[in-house]
Length: 182
Image 1 (cartoon, rainbow, N blue to C red):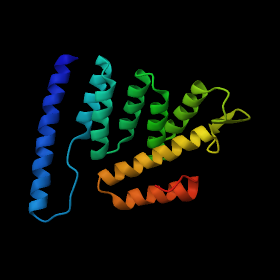
Image 2 (image 1 turned 30 degrees about the horizontal axis):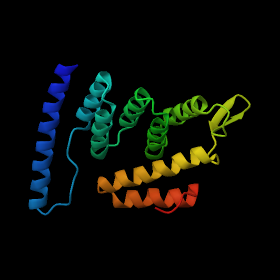
Image 3 (image 1 turned 90 degrees about the horizontal axis):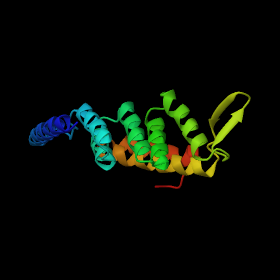
């Protein structure tokens, strides 16, 4: 694991150097900012940090990688890091962020249901109708996590330079979910 960590850290250094050079060339040419980088390096780095028990560094790598490309797998690995660190709330927020960015990814919703059932089995977080279960967005815990996740997603879009996307998430959070204005 330490050999792969060393190799990945060299890859990160090269990736950031190439990205900085490309950004500088774009700026010199008068082109709009563009995010450069290879997000998969940060995913692999995070997996390695999880294996060696450095969950904070794993999350930092994933945070950087998510700015390059907020791929669904990044949020799944975040959940792994939070779960390994025994941080169920962090895992719930990562799943909720993944759900906000990738609403068609059913895995996020089902994992959230499972996590809430484990976190607080007798809470209002999960609706059970017949044999089906679903999130109860009216439950204060779920609602608070949803609002926190939309804030984090809006901040991520802002860091990516996607100001319209950030605004859309904020507006949806307020109008559709009743979150406080950000």
